[in-house]
Image (cartoon, rainbow, N blue to C red; front, side):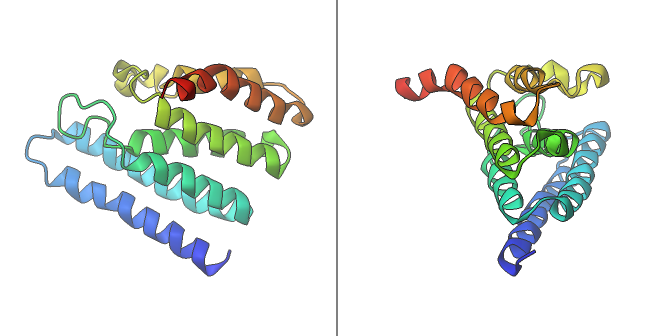
Length: 181
């Protein structure tokens, strides 16, 4: 891994870990929520470190861009000022999806397109994910309907079809929004 990319990864993980101190220092946050959020931080740390070993330079750079893009956005301010731990939950979801599906996508081009799509989906749809899914273990990985639909479209597809499916999905679901902005 090149030193700039390695430093970017270290800086990102440091910024993510600073959330843990904020959670533990919040007198209004209950211990269960602190434990949940700090557990997410641990999973993000271990997943990002393992992904840094598995992904090539271009893929890792794209992943870091995606997670940095959502990590500072407030999602679902309910219960506490942290809502879903700021952008911690979308970062977790992006890393989980890349961790679970990355190898099955085939080429570097497909993985980069998939990671970019995840980043865009979470940036543009934060108000559409239902917060009730945050604490229900069975529904936990189904936080965002667009991501679930994209993953279903990609299931069992040949790697030669992946890029086309991602491009069509993003065009169908998000090109209208960009025209309205």
